[in-house]
Image: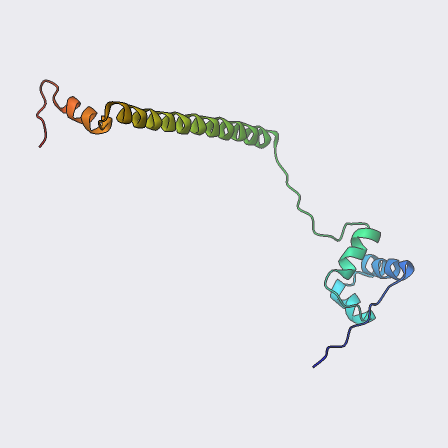
Length: 130
């Protein structure tokens, strides 16, 4: 079973501008224009609008903020940055101490964590756990 290759349709610049003008002035929707002129392709007319249109019909995200909100966002971003640095420092410190414990364990052939726990339980006023 063979599939026939589809033909490529090239539209002139004047045709594209005419379509965009109709959308902008007559208020036709993109789907109506596509049906009227037999234009296929999902983004064809949208790309013409971007290129030849006034861009007022394209979806835009507009964010309105007060000065206080902008300042608060900057404060929160600075706090996040500080917290990330603090987390990195504490992670590095923890890893360094783990390596130090491993080196001490190898050098003294002991388990520092177990022995440290046993020494702290032998302090005066405390009972050693068995």
